[in-house]
Length: 553
Image (cartoon, rainbow, N blue to C red):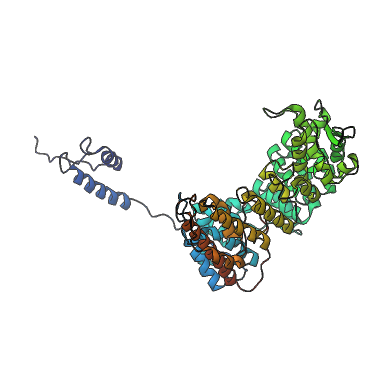
């Protein structure tokens, strides 16, 4: 000892404190913290002191520039009642999960897509105070994003630049909110097409194609040889909008593209043009494979599938390699018939109508292959006459014509028919076959459902109740009914609210569950009627939807 005072223990560094906290003071104590029973308290005291030290040692950062003001939204404001309704819809959370019993309260979150569709149809602007909740809802549900971002408008993009959680809005909007150039802004169009990001170029091409199909094709032609294969495929897909005979020369050139997917897409687009040279070539090939045999008791279609897939067929989009488990000849045959113009068949098959052709027997088990290919052709060429023939009458056994090999194909065929006829066919299907297979078919019907279709659905639900099953066996159809039934049908449900006497073979308690389900359906329909009134008196035209219907309220 030389009398010199001992040096104070150095303060523990932050990393030592964190390590000691993770391992426990029994196993490790940082410098300056004595071991023992008081070590945990001493560790916390040292951490508190070190926190103050670390904060005091920070230099203040430079003030960030004040963000630009949010852009103005020129659209009219929502009526006050509709704005309050939006707040309620956004505040709702999904209720029960996993179980089949939902109670009688409407599912407000499932009404939000309908509410947004109506607000967008009316052209209203989103209230500024609702934008954060609206963006949060769209963040959690990708199906909401297109309608939510359209309703939110430019202010949503302004907010998205300030909050990383909402970056999806910037990705979903080409140019991060910059408006696409108008038809007269040729310099901006050229610059964006030459220098823009891929998403911006796709959006630009789609916008021009919608208003000037020829100008969009010429824009694409100018840079086509230098585009990447995956980009060429996406750009080519935009030509589906406004597809017409003037696109044929460009698509014929695309048949020689080095990318197989590009060639296949070009061939598909050309086959959708019944007057194209490719369609004529396919008509000759397919016609050589099908003939009417008059030597039998009943005129019968006979099929002779191609024996090879030559270079010309491959150039025209026929895929030579069959999928696993599929015969090559039937695979080639189906592609030829699918791509041949349907208008060529009556002349080749004795002047018969589509219905008469479909009714002919087909020899040697080729019927399923032939009719399935005609189904695909009818959908591709949007031919309602052939779709009617292939669908058949809805009351037929297994509900459809021989070509409708699946519910998905029936739904696609229905999509080519006028909306009223589509609803009438599905109503007949439900009346004859019930609801067990109706979900996909209901999904292609315009909403709100036409009165005959709505009555058929309610009657079928009532029959299912009387049969003694549980309502959650039809939860999908019931959910569609809540969103798609005309609110005027609510009164018809009042007679279904009483709990019926249960037959001996009924599921226990099913009557009470059905009463709840019908009460919830009626309440939801009345709520939708109120929601429509809250937007004001302007009429809303019916909205046609695809497999996942979104209806105006």
